[in-house]
Image 1: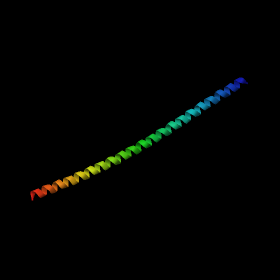
Image 2: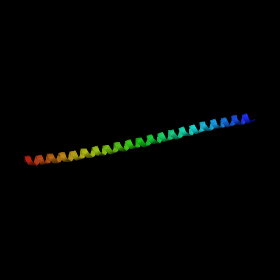
Image 3: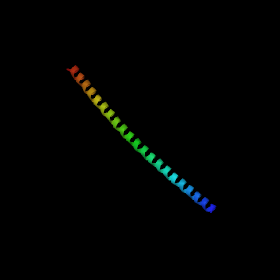
Image 4: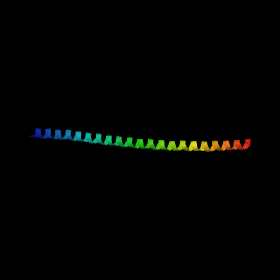
Length: 77
């Protein structure tokens, strides 16, 4: 009877260990997926910000270039 109880306890411990491992793996996978989602969102935000900076740079260059052309035209007249 004692042997059977020991076997039952051992089986129960093994099942608990397997369940704990499955839970741990699930948490790890969920955390990894969440990290990837945040990382992708940050990259998207960075790309949008850099596009805005590039557009602003182009606009400033165009305005500055036009102003310089206007000055040259006035000086030539």
